[in-house]
Image 1 (cartoon, rainbow, N blue to C red):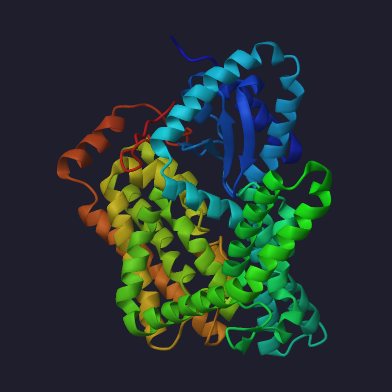
Image 2 (tube, rainbow, N blue to C red):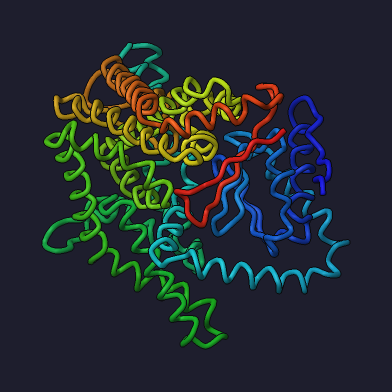
Length: 512
């Protein structure tokens, strides 16, 4: 049976186009009654579904705005940066508008979907991955502020070095540093929220860490320093506050709960933070910074090669989320993270590999269309369209893309060993989008040259490795012959389908 026709966004710009995209997506994911939750990250619309079987995958992936889909704990529709932030509110409004008239059969559907979701979660969600997901949910909401303040910090450094607009420099310094001076509070708030406590109590306890008055308190034979322990201390303090609050909820009489529970939560977890967590977390944070600097100062090209080469597999397995607190700790300590520019080289290898695939498959219009549409985002550090549309479906090019990332990371690591450490003042962006965030122990011009050289090395190594080793002769012949017989023009849209039960064995399909 031929698939039903699906609406395509008809607006030219702005709200109309975003609403049209949302209107096109909603019926293809089972309608409003099938939506349990709606959220988004930097590139993906994340949907909690009652019944996965109601999703019409092929028409959904045929929508021009949809770059691909990923199945994890949620059903994730890749729309790209910027677009997803504008489509999500429109999608939520549509869901709310349609939910009331559809509520009659919602209970039965919810029960059936809940059973399916529970089975999938039991199969895929390991305790370690669930822990990493929680860590990501704590820090990901902070990324926009980190990016914005990071760019302002870079602009302020540029104006300072060039001696331009001296009256503006103090104002930019305040704007860039204000958020970072209080980041522990935001981490504490999000941590308590994520672990099921009262968010403001988590923020209140974490605020102790940055309070200037802690400088008068002795712990472990020395004076505490405001900010000691940083985001790691805030994490620990807020988690402790959640457990204290829950304990109070069990033992404190209901009539006294509103008075006693908040006071005991702040008192107990605050004292433990002052006389234990701040010191321990401070030592751990210092060790992280020292280890990262030592690794690049002594390991150099070798360390960069390994880090750049392994980052794509870490992303595929979801393990890269464990690096978020490390990046944040380094930014808090040094003003920049020296790890991110090296890890960003994985995206450069991905771009080089995709370019080689384009050259090696001159007759495969489907894959070439995917590459043409995804490369601009790849250059800006958004790698999902290339990963799910090109390298993972083809298999070998994913490995050769990792080779490109390894060479790019080795290039940046080598210069770190030579004394030109390149860092980023924020996390999130990569590729060309990272240039405004560069910082380090050298002048901006030298940092740009090192990072740019790493990108070129990643592009070149990814291209050469993929061109030479990305395909067997049989696969190359088959992929070129398969679409050579097709009359589909190269300008037609492309879909990507990914099998996420095994992220290393996705399936790519072309659409007409």
